[in-house]
Image (cartoon, rainbow, N blue to C red):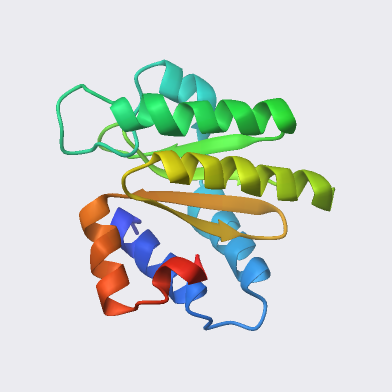
Length: 162
């Protein structure tokens, strides 16, 4: 079964809305079962350095968000805590990722510092970075401004829930 970007977003939104007692465990299970199980994931930073893209799927070869927001954020996270960072490439287009995953450390101080890095990247981004923090994994989804506004109109507290 192919996982689409919208199905990922749907699952993330369901998680954010509080459909589970242990959202972190549910998030980690999703990462393990949906993204890492088949072994097609690749290292994130080299993927983006080699013209891989995540955010700008419908545009030309321009990858400004990937190069100006996603890659610097991943580099900052890696400098803070050099744990696994993966993207899951699309099977039809291996230069296009549909998931960005970051392993989390056991040190809560470092996790807090990671959250600040992600929030800083989110502040620079016109859209919104959806974050699903697990116990072991952080799953990120970058949505454009139009989609972010749609979610905010549908649920005025959406921005506070992420």
